[in-house]
Structure formats: C-alpha cells, structure tokens
Length: 327
Ligand SMILES: [Zn+2]
Image (cartoon, rainbow, N blue to C red; front, side, top):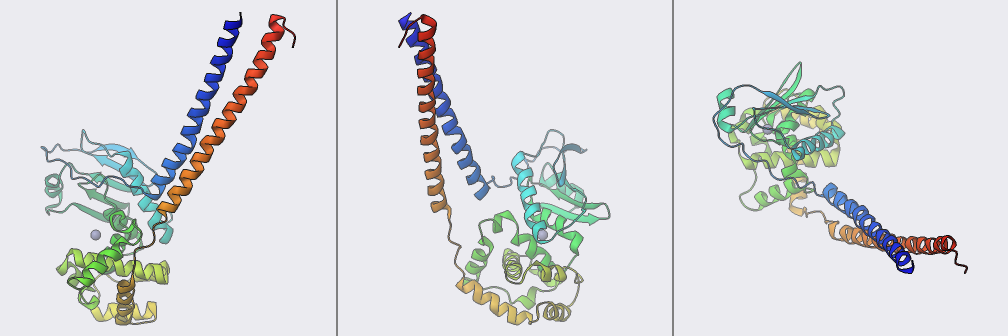
C-alpha cells in the first residue's frame, strides 16, 4: 500500500516537472525564435529555376492577401517567398498607400529559357500594369524588385532613375539590412566614383548605363530623399512623365524639393561620405531576450515545483483519509 502511494506521488511529481519543463522551454523559446525571425527575416536567396523541358500551361498554385501565384505544372511557391512578398508589400504601401489595388498576379517560370521563350529577351523578370492590375513574370519564386514595380505602377511611370531607385531602395537584398544600399553606394563612391546624377536622369540615359552602379546609386539617392524629405514629395516625382528631358526633370525636381538637383546631389554625397552602418541593437536585444527567457524558465520551473509540491501534499492528505490514517 505504502509503495503504491509513493509510486503515485512520484509519478505526479515527475508529470508536473515534465509539464513545467515543456512549458518553460516552449513559451520563451518560441518567443525568442519569433522575435529573432521578426528582426532577421533571413529567407534563403531566390534561386533560379532549374532548366528542364518546358511544359505549356499555368496552374493556380496559391493565393495570399495581395498576390495570386501561378506556376508551371509540378512547381510551387514556398511559404517563405509568399511571406517575403507580403512583407515587401506592407513596407512599400506603408509609404505609398495603394488603396483598392487588385491582387498582383505572379507567374513563376520554370527557367530563364522558359521566360525568354515568352518575352524574347534574356531577362530574369518583368512587371507590367494594365487596367486589370499588375502582373509579375519571374524565374524566381521570390522577386521583390519586380513586385515593388508592380506595386508602384499605380502611382505612375516616372523616369526610370526614380522608378528603379525605389525598387532598389526597398528590395530586401539591399534595404532590409538597414541601409545596405547606402553601404554599397558609399563603397562605389570610394572606389570608382558614382555617375553624376544629371548623366543618368532620363530614362534613355539610365537604360543606356543599365549597370549595377546606376541602380545602386539611384536606390541610395531615392532612399535618402524618402528618409529625409518624406514619401509625399517622391509620390509627386512619380507623376512626372517617363520620357522627359534632363532639363524638364531638373525643373520639376526643383519645384518639388525647393532646391536644385545638383544641390541635393551634393547634400546626398556628403551624407554618403559620413554614413556609418546603423548600430545593430541585436546583441543587447538578444541578451535581454536571453535574460527574459531564462527568467521565465526559472519562474515556470519554480511554479511547477511549487504546484507539484502542493499537489503532493493534497494527494497525501487524500490518501491518508482514504486509507484511514489520521495526522
Ligand atoms: Zn527594375
């Protein structure tokens, strides 16, 4: 009888401890992991679709809040890509609201050959806009740059310098590391120099350069303008005609920003020269999270032990009553 009682009490104690450990580890653990992922949405880089024989036809793969995905038979869009697109959508529309926009149709091609067969050019992606909304065609499962174009088409088609600049500024590969695009532009400023802005201002000139330097430069300048002077002025820039001359764009810029493009360029170059990567709060934050989760674990464990101790006492009392013992 006594050994049965002990066994019952011991089992209860072990069960309580197990619950305490599981709860103690899972709650702070999931909080820690969730917070970390929120800070570092480090999704794997987009990968090029493998080159396999093409099969015609599109299948509706999945749908998210702002996107409808179509893939070739046998392919699908992974969760991380959907999440990153939604994240990009949310970041861009926070600055440039596009109320009532239709969902973006996203066609993921099997390979670059597959996409080239459809469009005739060896590109990785396209975005375009019709009355029915925006569409992205891409060889990647995840293509934030084209997605940003798809979002901003409803704002207008400004000179390519600004349109590409905005897409680079908020593309996760350049922007999510808190100013990475400025780091790239700063590096180019120090090494081979940047193009004078007036030389890449028109759509024709920008496309003639069509180089990483021109894209990074546009991205850094546009991000600087938005961060320093707000999104409304950039929204005005997006109403400019796509094929204006350098003089026309400079005049419109002067009117919108109240200073000339060359003055703004000097200001931005000074900013770039003095730019430092933002301090990463991660270490302190991680330490405080660690402290929090450690304390939580201890609290839950202590709580679990206290609870099991109380249950132990109660069970013992009950056992004594049932067995006819008196204290
Ligand atoms: Zn682009």
